[in-house]
Image 1 (cartoon, rainbow, N blue to C red):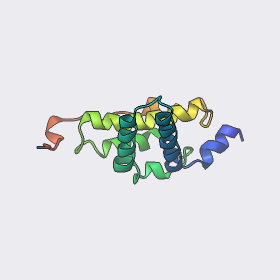
Image 2 (image 1 turned 60 degrees about the vertical axis):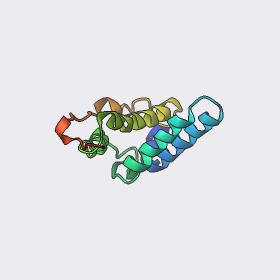
Image 3 (image 1 turned 180 degrees about the horizontal axis):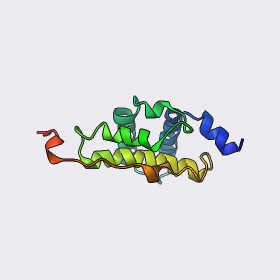
Image 4 (image 1 turned 45 degrees about the vertical axis):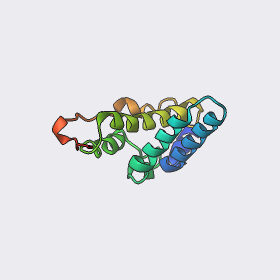
Length: 127
């Protein structure tokens, strides 16, 4: 078994998400990332992803359908821009893992994730 296979088999997505947020905090401390951007990432994770089934899996068991489902589950209550932030959280976390060599370069799961179609009448009015 290759090292990357062992990594994806053993790493839980929730643990890696916390690591991703921690590394972003280090970037804020170094002046390479805005605090407001980190705050938004943290809110996206805690409010929309932390308790989902997809985040409880390991990377080896995570599918594009799982990620698509986390986004689609919120399509009736969030605007497209907020759904996109969920997508970008997933994308950024996985991209960081690949860039750091913690996930295999072949782990291109995000290319298969589909954003839902949003109909205006599904959205709640926020006034």
